[in-house]
Image 1 (cartoon, rainbow, N blue to C red):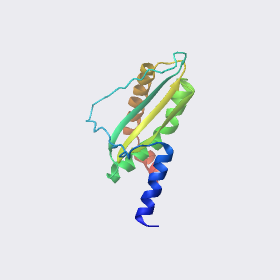
Image 2 (image 1 turned 90 degrees about the vertical axis):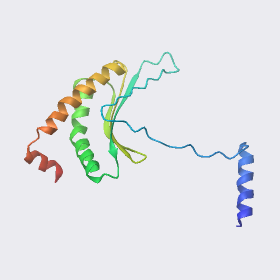
Image 3 (image 1 turned 135 degrees about the vertical axis):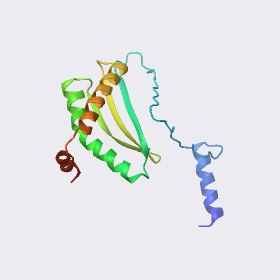
Image 4 (image 1 turned 45 degrees about the vertical axis):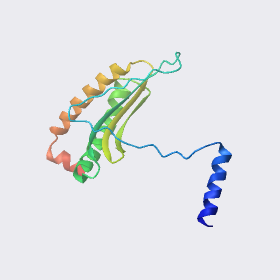
Length: 153
């Protein structure tokens, strides 16, 4: 297949699906948040009968190239995963979807907690996540060397 044949085939495919020009792929970027910076984005649903609320609570941690930071984030995720579900979903019954985990977005690390609820507002869920993180991050700081060793090894 020559370059000319390949271009002719590509043009024929584009013509067939109705595109009239080649579009450049969108530029993908990540907002560089500064320590202590908080951003809240609210979206209104199109269906006014929709009774669910959802929050995606994202903490930007740093660049994925920082191997030590990446390892610490994985450890924090491991230690928070079960208590996050148990406390926010089972005990506080905030929503029927509760999850936590790490995120890698275009080379930037983050920790994310997501809740979807029919009974709680996003603002209420945010306050509960704040409380959960404050309590459990202090528990991580106070963790004994033995307990730390059990989770690392």
